[in-house]
Length: 415
Image (tube, rainbow, N blue to C red; front, side):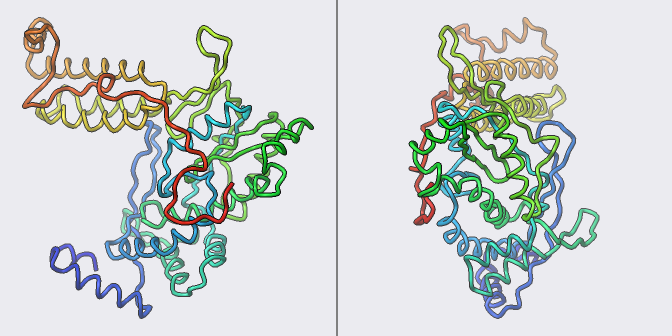
């Protein structure tokens, strides 16, 4: 269905949509297997992430299905999850960790779910969907997409008995529906009337030596912050494993760890650590840029500025500006000034070495070409100048929004 549409151009879209609507209404629509694509995971580990790319027709139906399902489940989702939800972003999850970390939640269950998107039980997921959706046509479509199968890169057809392939429009929502079972379990004591529902109750628990905890989840990445001891956190680890098992999921033994915030941990590209402020006896939770995203962006800069690069200088500067602007805007709420300056210096020297190799200049010639009348070194071409993130992107504190994050739909589960 996608081939004729793309070949005929925009004029074919209305007819394509009419045919697709009719197929969905009369029940004859059948999703095709997703095309498997393997992409390297960031960080240079050598591991790959499997993506499942749906056809154009399947993407259209998935988008329509998402419009139906999202308002229903957004009304139920707890505010402790942030990934792939409207009006929420990774920085809200980091701000939540800051908020509770400064209030004594110092032990962290830094969890990693093994192959989450590939392992979610279809039975468990469909049971959760059926609990809120009664329309059989909608349920049939969800099941059809889950069971559509995969067309591997070798052209082989593989059935899908578990999981919801990454790459589809519907997959993040389905994963959130499944993992909301974990949110609900961990946050049950915080619900009205529960033993952690008020600050007074939480304080009373801690006065009796009992822990309090809070989960912060972004898609399949999550941490549980504990105001208690390592032993309390270890008990929660076992509890989480028990909750995940019926969903067909399990924690990675190698990657799941229990850490104290004083030692720090990585989450969503940030390094979060509780440490003493320099020159004082006061301790705060700080957010730095983790090592992996810095390594990754440097690798991309090296590729763009390699001495054998065939790009024109203007093209290199444009691509560098796009890369660094996006990277810096994501990390600008961390303790990042020093890192931004160091990355600027790294990039400048990469450009300098590229220009020397490209033109055969020595350092004196490079200086004469790059030094302006005002004495300032300037790398530019065709009106495009080297983009310095330390001068262009302001580092600032992200405002904690807590339960004030707006939602397009009414909620039924405040927490």
